[in-house]
Length: 375
Ligand code: UDP
Picture (cartoon, protein in one colour):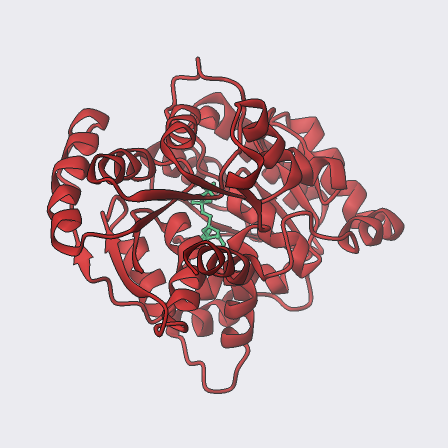
């Protein structure tokens, strides 16, 4: 069977890389090709090189001042050529980006079966000015097979009248990626300039608080409040070191460098490559983030997560207790951090919980399912 795997952003690349490897390990059954749209260029290439994946097709669609109209149109028209060249039986897409939605439409037009990985996440807020809920919902309409990470995401799809046999619970492939990466980063052969530099920045006598943030809903007052909270945490807890890889978006860079630029126990650094980031997550005591992927990864490393969002399309982590929603309220962020720094029982309770997002076997479940239906 001919399998085309399409992705475009860093988080998609991280979550699809172990699937590419799993399909490639079974090349007696599958002819696998990888197509990147390169919706994120540099960050995507770093991930591909770490996972040793060379794409067969690179649509390279990013242009200056790219907008959602031209992005969507360019993906569909360029992917048409790939679909005509390779003629896949199955097109795999991931998550909720413009790449996901546009590629699933193009794949649908070609007559291929569409497989959606990380299917069924919903915020139920289509009115949001941001396209993610629409992207994942449209992909859900178009897809033939839905690989849902959890029972909650499966239920969302059943509520949308998907047939039970078309929704497969697999866990999230991000855990597969994480376990592969932790092993590789800690192996003696692994040499990485960025990770080595990071080792010189970290104060190993202090508790490391890792911070990341990029969500558009937090731009403006949200990031100002986040910075105020981090400043207060740093000054009240001199035994901590805050390490903050700052997202490249100017709406994030400006407030963060202005408000946190000159504090001795806060280190603002450039966004990290995935291996360096995995290494740092492992070394951290606590993680404060608005990232979706980090919420899923951190529990597998036993790290409590404070989530700087008011709502989440990942309720499983909140229910399991592996993350705590704190929004961008200064007092909530400061109080929750203080508690986890001072109350060892509260910390241990949170860090020892089972990860609701899976066990690292999502990709073999996906590939086995395709094998079972193709004979
Ligand atoms: N990540 C990374 N370097 C960083 C910050 C995050 O490699 O400096 C990784 C992280 O481990 C996770 C993914 O990027 O797997 C999450 O990406 P992001 O937060 O950009 O997107 P989201 O998950 O919110 O869609």
